[in-house]
Image (cartoon, rainbow, N blue to C red):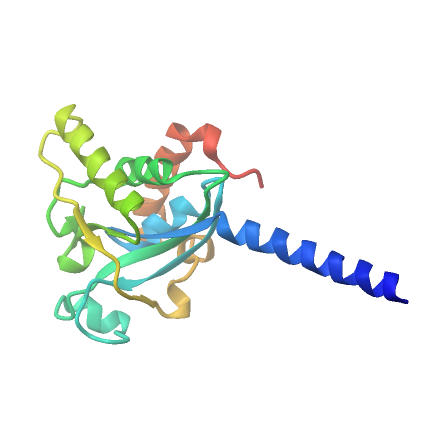
Length: 202
């Protein structure tokens, strides 16, 4: 009986260790690159990304609604909170995608979406993320990849508020909407072309 109990205990312990190790591989980063529908659609297809949640960060009002954020008066940016497996992808890959699928040189706008809520911003959660963000921005500016300087802000993460349910998985649920066809789909196609070796295997 004692041997059976010991085996059960060891099995549960090893299972717990494996789960903790798996959890330790996960990390989150919060990014704002214009309308969160666009950014969400891209990262949902990047290998190693476990979840993408649309929401708001960087403002001064608790639990803002989408309508409140749209006024530009709450100070929030539309963002996505990305949870990824560091064993499959890394923060540098996350940032490469970020700077490929949006224009980081236009202040408070992405195309026809205008306002501080559409600003380009990286909310870092640790020193590694901050260093990686500042490094890639410096490299892109030095190489003059864009005609204008990058205006992306790099700020410490404070709080994230999840957007209403109908904003989650928006592209997947609304592919026939005009905005999805004309704005999101071209970004997604560009991502799939540039990062074809990094796509999830569905």
